[in-house]
Length: 187
Image (cartoon, rainbow, N blue to C red; front, top):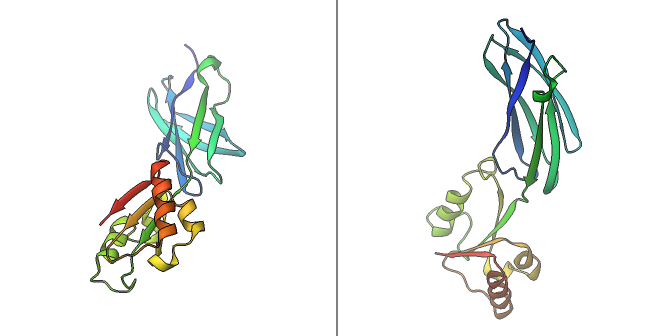
């Protein structure tokens, strides 16, 4: 008989993490022995090191969960490990993660932000019902007159909701940004 436990999987939820938002790393441990096991899984990812204890039934699997928040976008590598046993080759899982930056969504409308009957209010609530329920992006709402060069140059998605009147320079910047790959939706 071989005393062996193995890391059979490592996955992230969400699969494409966003900087500044919580991500769960799940590491699946398989117990190859006829007795229950208590194992410690060690995660080293980016500049983070965490350990989690997991109970695994005989010939069963269990997940060790780690909560991670990446502070910046970019590629990260790491590994999950178990303590050495009779078969050490299956005790390590390597991870490669690409963390995306949160998209900035600019909603432009001249409707009053407090008017719950306006199309802009419904569109903004559809995009982000609450600040906690808008994963992957930040919603910024502006009137046409308040769309300065800074916000137009940094937004990744433009949502234009009637009524809205953009000035000449704002239209030129928006057109260039859309031609360069920014997304544009008009209502």
